[in-house]
Length: 289
Image (tube, rainbow, N blue to C red; front, side, top):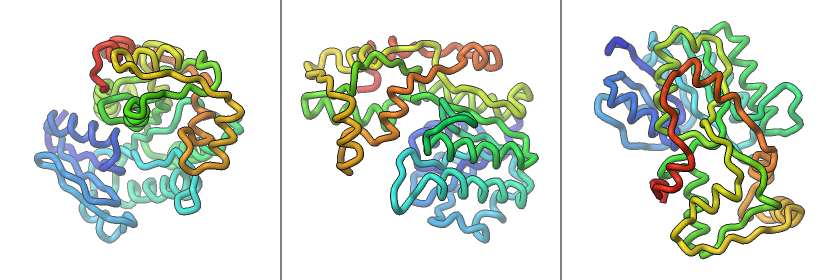
């Protein structure tokens, strides 16, 4: 890829964005990164801090960039930031920014399990965001990620907090499976989606090569920490999520966990041809602790 190509990243202070920005920077890609709050920028990276993503500030700086990676989103509904406002309306704003600044390519992270028939509010908002992008006329790549794991991802930080307390709770049986993907692999694939025509106008499950039960994941993650693993009644977990703002699991956290969503890894591998990291090997190595 030519070094004079410029990439824009939204949600620059988030976990995925930090790692993607670092990887692109190391590959000599010119970056313009945008966030609502201040963040540390990498070498050669232009930083934009704008609480409201003010067009007057942003447009002159991102004009004629090659692509935009849209990583802003929320996974928990609240009075201040709800799914429609952030996942749908804000995505529409970003699409308009692309058009006004003559950016032809957009990469978007949606969610594994998103479909037009979903009954879940979170997935509905992500599906509506996808439609905004598909109908925009832009060249797009939409990724539907499973759990993206790395040293400081949200899920890992939660489990480390539980280990400090001496106990990890598993809602229900724990036999439902997840299909995590390592952040290093995600960064490589996102760069490919910018440079390769094979990703044009594609919707792809962003998943790792292994399905692993939640029980096994927790067991491997906590190996050597002498942490107690406790199963809690699923109905009680949902009740706590509804009635307690500080509950271990939000309602949609539980929906995503027990949904047992499975992604099409083979399709992703066929296009990317990268060697994916093994979730089990990552857990066994203790790299996430």
